[in-house]
Length: 261
Image (cartoon, rainbow, N blue to C red; front, top):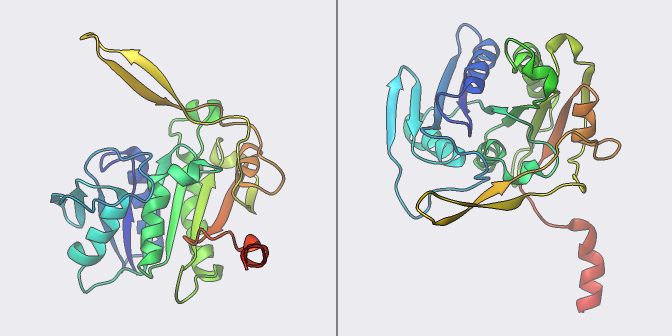
């Protein structure tokens, strides 16, 4: 099996090393794992692509490349340059430092990388590690992902509904904020919504007197409703959410056609 891995935390992020180990285990002794990851951190860029300017790509070692672009850029670079003519069997994106559950999914470069792979017709899984007080006390905060990641990827490869055209399915996996032994199991969960918090801005003044704005988040650890990813994670479960890039509100189509007829 040939696997392409990427992330949004950057080529030197510890979560990427965890993902490399997961991919090596899934690919097996005769497999190949190729890395194309951002040269610098790209958290929060979503499904951005560098459409209006070129990006530099550098080979750092065997099957290891850094690109000055987003995770989606890295997937495109991997498919059409690094692996040109040798299409991967799977794209893995992560392991993100922090959860990509709930509305975080919409901002996530980790998700953006997996989404681009799916749009290109390649099976893809995004993996993220929810952080919290219990993970901070561990030798590795990625312990749950490292221990359970390869087995879950194998199960999704065997049993996931991947589709064969159009907006293909990809999977969003979030590991709970606890140690590997504390993980209670896996739940298939819908994307939640944190109605108690939102991103905002915090103004600051630089030493030169110029005014800047920091983007500021809020609380992350309250449940978001039964059957959703955030709830599963804070209760100690791995969440698996099947996703597609189709943003159409299909439930409104029939009524809207009637209203606008």
